[in-house]
Image (cartoon, rainbow, N blue to C red; front, side):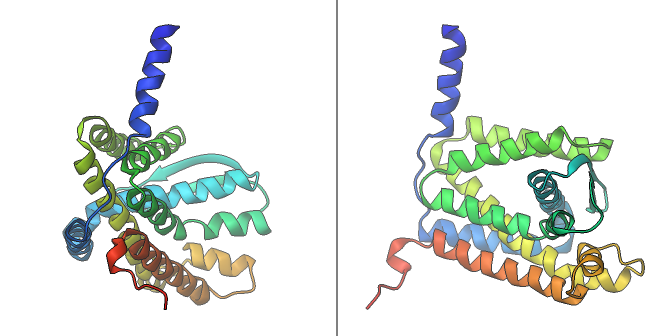
Amino acid sequence: MSAVAAVLSAILGRVLAPSPSPGTLDDVVAGLVVAAAVAWHPMWRRLRHGITIVHEAGHGFAATVTRRRLAGIRLHSDTSGLTVSVGQARGAGMALTLAAGYPAPCGAGVLVAWAVGAGHAALALWGALLLLTLVLVQIRNWFGLWTVLLSGVLVAAATWWLDPIWRMRIALALAALLLLGGLRAAIELGGARRRDRRGTSDADQLARITALPGGVWAALFVLAGLVALAAGVLLLAPPGLLPHPA
């Protein structure tokens, strides 16, 4: 029993281990590198798988809290995903489940940015590892299984072996990826809707069960991404760069 307690104590110590807050140079380098990666299409096609994981996790979380039965998650090689939940086809639960996908990466980015800015980069990375574990048990296809496992191994390695400074930098890059990647995914929804004649996007499905048209939902997702990005920048900005109240 003492051995188990020692292991749990060691893990808890790593989860709560403090990390240095990012400086201006850290913020600028992470922001520029991640922005370039998100803007460069070949790299974005790879990074978007991570955004899709969090997107589908958002659907799954909303389905769970609204008491819908989560039946599984699929991730596809074209960076799309599908979360299946069982319950009423209309109503608040279904609407919240559909609406949660696009804001999820941006919301997660704000949480990671807060943790990094507060000196808890390790907590942010362990939180990402927990999310990947929860998604893993719901995966229902081989590509999704491989994608989540690989992401989990990378996050676990960064969490366990890197020193506090590099944990902070990795978590900072993760925050930037979630904020910028989540925003780009929301912006891309407009083009995806024009190409999709079947109306299967989250925005079009929401339009069929709510009073708002799909275009309004798509615009709201972009707005949520912009607000989250602004919040992330404020959370990560070194204190000396913030304007002082008069």
